[in-house]
Image 1 (cartoon, rainbow, N blue to C red):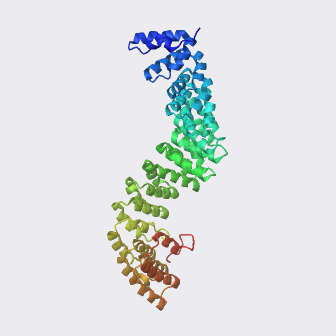
Image 2: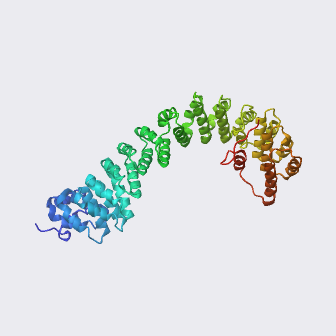
Image 3: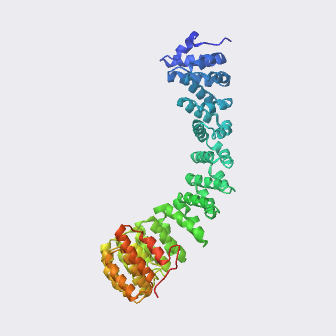
Length: 493
């Protein structure tokens, strides 16, 4: 049969008719003409009118496979409109032999052609999966982006092969593969869970991150197993992934706490901290745990979250029988900074059973109004317990309140050596020059057991006033008490 040409065919003009019956009749006739009409139909795909092109595409799709050869040949054209329409037609037909051409078309200079090619590959489906995965490493970002979009569009049929391709791919392609699996979601959890057991930590890391984003409950236990992974970055990724499950992860986190593994408990704390307020109820409930270490960790994590709804329970924890729990509760209340916690914190400062190495109540009080805190702390500087006096001196130094200088200089004669040392250090923190003479007198009269600290403090005050420079209070405290990298912690007798 001789090929039909648009110029010779009134049928093509009839396709433009405003009368639907006329258009339908012409379209049916062209479908019946079959292969002989294909060259003219391919040429007509370059028409600027979208509705007209859509009708031509429908005709070619109805003709089906006999049209594929001419469509492939017709793609080599200067008309980007025709290229885009040919790609769309090949995809709708499901022409797997067009896969290579369509992948190449994803680097076309015209976005319309690239988008049509990506869409066409989705329609081709499973036979396009392998070449699309290979295309994720293509130098062209357009091809990589289009291939990822097409694979996501193909969906679940691509999942197993996408997951299987992760271990053998480079880092950039692995990331795209994982992102694509997250987009697909359906059916992606099981193959990703298998990758959590892979020998390569970078594969485990990628799988863990993807599972956190997909957020299917069946991934919770396998992710929890990674909290003990030998690779630090994998553990951190598993923590971040589990945090995205919120309440759904509580049961497995509770089981992890029960194992009495310090590193595992650290990981649980981090996970709960990342959950934020969603974890508050879990943390508050476990402040009643018979295990003091769990109570301590829960109190600390509540301080990280800073949820005011835990205030009453944390205040109650200031009376916990375990010192470490009381200290952590004090720190948490300092982080929450609720005025209702001020009186309980002041009472905690005066607790004679708390050795100086448990002085987080002093740090917590720094977060509150100094006009209220300072007079009460000054009063505590006269407490019967040397431990309370030590902690009060620390608090005044942390507050850096000028009103603390006079009572601190008065405490330079404290009968306890370690209290005197803490008083000297706190005067250095405040940096008021009025403290220099009393400190010098101590040097002359040899009334202090640590003349080196005394000389250093005097020099520190003088240097601070001359240069205006300061150091962080916490850093100074750690260096002077041995809570940092050097020295040993000293406490009152």
